[in-house]
Image (cartoon, rainbow, N blue to C red; front, side, top):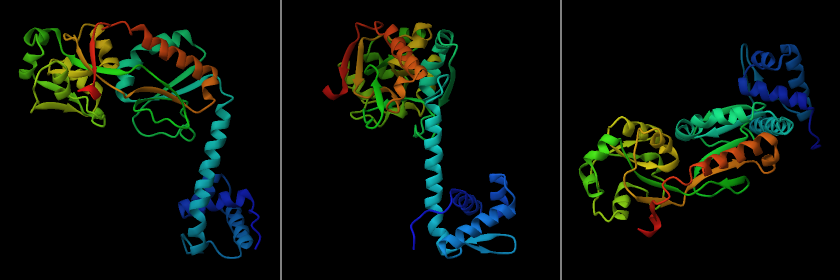
Length: 312
């Protein structure tokens, strides 16, 4: 038996029919007549030498051969579509899709986007706020901003500054709790989205960095960092705030960071794209703007006493 592949149109017809288990729906998707689609599948079956479908009165079912062929054709066409899409994007110098977590989008990225838009009116910027794992080759995303440890093999990756955390609260609450020791009696808020950090960047380790022995037994936990910060802004409690996510609220006066003690993690935000994509004009311009925006506020809290959690 020859290993020569059958016509691509016949395989495409089979893939759609196998996915829908309907010749009519597959024909509608491919914008052909049911008769034309049936002819393509029939020619594929003749090429294979055995049937791929069991034809019923109003439906079809896959034969054993069809069940064997279906996963490979589905994966093959998805890979082909992804490759074609990625190749077409190489010629697009105006559209830029950026994926970032909801907290970074709300607390850091969104307040600064007007500046980027004014400086780059030729770029059609699209923001996807999500924490889900993405495939830069398949999901039509040009840039991903992700927080975590450096494990970016296969990608162009630029790490941002290391990230530290320190208590942040409203000015009124800062008057109630003027010392690290006094925070033992404060309502504490934590961001549980960083529970994966090891060693943990939590309240117990921050108290250690401040020379206070205290293991909090009651903490208000939020799964999203921006929700934790908003709760602190509303006076609910004191949040162990991450620098880039709380800086806008501090500069606006909604929060203060009254203590000099901070804890630092090796995890950080990274700018990610496919290798070679960093040379595309809109990706390069966004990268340069992103890194420059980080440096604009690098001098703030320059006297902070930062302790790596690995040293605690």
